[in-house]
Length: 426
Image 1 (cartoon, rainbow, N blue to C red):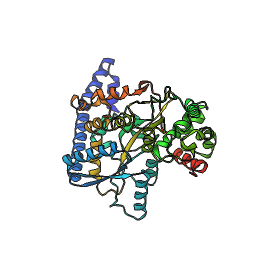
Image 2 (cartoon, helix red, strand yellow):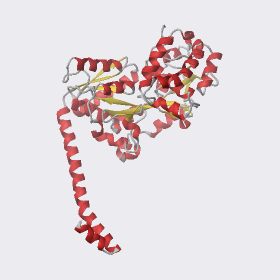
Image 3 (cartoon, rainbow, N blue to C red):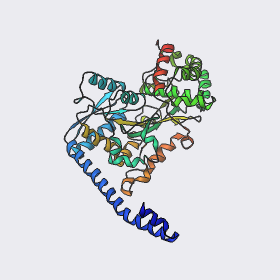
Image 4 (cartoon, rainbow, N blue to C red):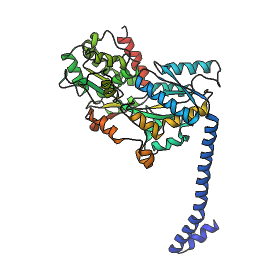
């Protein structure tokens, strides 16, 4: 206090001199602390690299798309070369399979030798694993490449369907709901949800969606739910981003059921049968049975055309009233026996090399989660700007897309349960 009193007794100019003097004393210490922190972080990562090499990593990820499978095979080759890690892609039909496995292991007190090292996850499955304490804690933010997402200015990198990830997930891609059609058969595709309903009445049997809880089918239903409740007061429609309650369900869901009751008779097979996934949608489109369809991977369309799975007259677009968008993540179960190896793989998935490769339309077309302003010229060189231009050229109104945020994960379970009760006899 005596020192403070003396400073206060100085003249105004003297005050600034004293303040500057104090800063000069403090700044070297702060720089020293920062330097020590960076050294400690680098040393920690070096230890992870030492412990994580020459191990196996079992990556449980959806296996329903050959492009994605091929990309994961490419990743496996890269981590083998860099770390001598054997990456095994355990192909899932649904991510809930991995959730159930880890939950069963915990119930059996298998806390150290789980079968899942890394899992592609988001939304309700993440919320479920976090709730049951099935995930490794506080690791994602410590990955060296995580800083390249610029999380301080991009909070979506640390929130999964609105739920804070708290270091339990690392982002690795983002996508938006994209529709496509055969331009030789459809002159004017529907541009909004209301137009889609009218279009199906005029072209019965030429549209459908996958049966929930399949991810793509659920995405269509959530898109519809958001649009159908846009005229609701803010205090009601904002409940879509909070945990579902009996009250909010009663306020929000009736519009969806009324819409589906009107839509289903116009669907493929009159809505008495629903396909299982997006691959089935693409096959029906390629066969000419469907004329309008949709995907969560925009680059799937030009790739399918190149493989002759879809006619070259196929065009893709995003709805003018909005496109559901989300970021997908990878997580490490709490009982992974190869924790450090899984971190090395997750960090590689966030590398500019891996992100740029994945963004190529000929590979996957999944949008990068990196903030390109954070990259060095060498890192930026991995990204071929012509790829983005090519993708944009094949998607109508991509630059005017209104992105819709994902709902709170509890809504997925609510929608699935009630959908199956109403329409699930098929």
